[in-house]
Image (cartoon, rainbow, N blue to C red; front, top):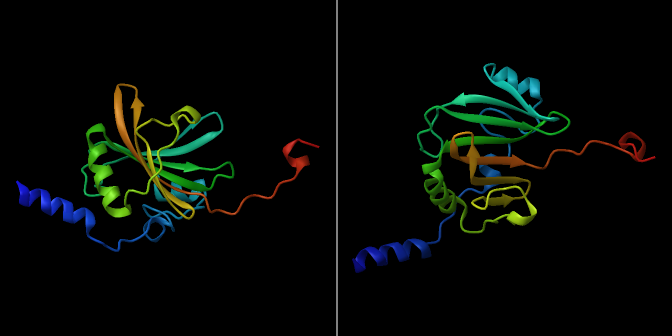
Length: 173
């Protein structure tokens, strides 16, 4: 037992050089590029269905590929867009039991330097953890569904050029 505990302790102390979030995901995921138009993503995923809540629009497709070597039978991918209809995020669903496995894999890759959003000032679940690197982020959390809970892994990008605007075009003249 002491040997096992010693090995575990040494693993936490071992220095390693892993790829950064930006190196892994900074150009996009699943064959898409950050900033791709809605039409471009739909052309790559023609079976995706357009979903929306008010003016927030995303594409959703059933997907069972392994992600982080975790089986995802009958799960979904969500492609999220900004108000200019440019790709800014992708969500990957897992069954709720995958949450602890994902946390283990993400802390192994990116360390323990994550943020836990303040639940009082956000609508994110208290189980949400976020790793940030420049304009690219990875998050994982447990979210409610119609019949229970699921784990959602998110990869997002905030580095797109901001659209030009002025007071008049925004209605503040």
